[in-house]
Length: 243
Image (cartoon, rainbow, N blue to C red; front, side, top):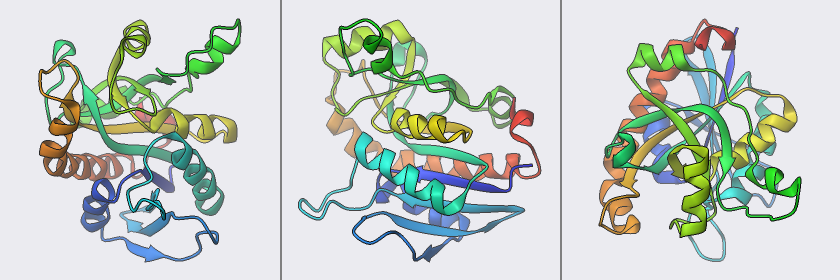
């Protein structure tokens, strides 16, 4: 039975609606020197902890992308010992693959990197990652959420070499943290699932950054709705029962 769920989120703006919706409270205990923030509480029969990557002390911006996500995931798993990890946040999608602004996707298939190009045998596959996720097809059907392949990079844009890799993987969602979270959960043997709300369409003529800023508030509201629904559905189930 799933008892404890850890929700890993990069940005405060993505996490705060979830924290508010669930009524979670701040929790101390983050190791000294690390910028992460924990909020936790009981949600139905679940213990839920939301961890954010915090603020970069030099630049005053959210710690986005893979390095903070990996370290935060490790530290937070060590603290909360979750039965399931959700990597939650905003992302880009493709209109040509059926995405629209505000859609929420659950991960379907492996979490992969699309910017780690290492042209050496064996290292090339290592670069892509391919970290398994929970089979959440049944969960997605019950909640009327889309599913798709989620790919990760450390860049907001998508130059052609990255596009080629995304096409090869059949990417439906592109973002900047999930595969890093997936790497840590794979190493530690903890089930993981991505929950991603679409802020921008990669194949739209408007610049990605402009779309992201215009749609962030709406997408984070949709994200909080989806995370709340996911938690309600999985309460009382095992991981295997999400399929």
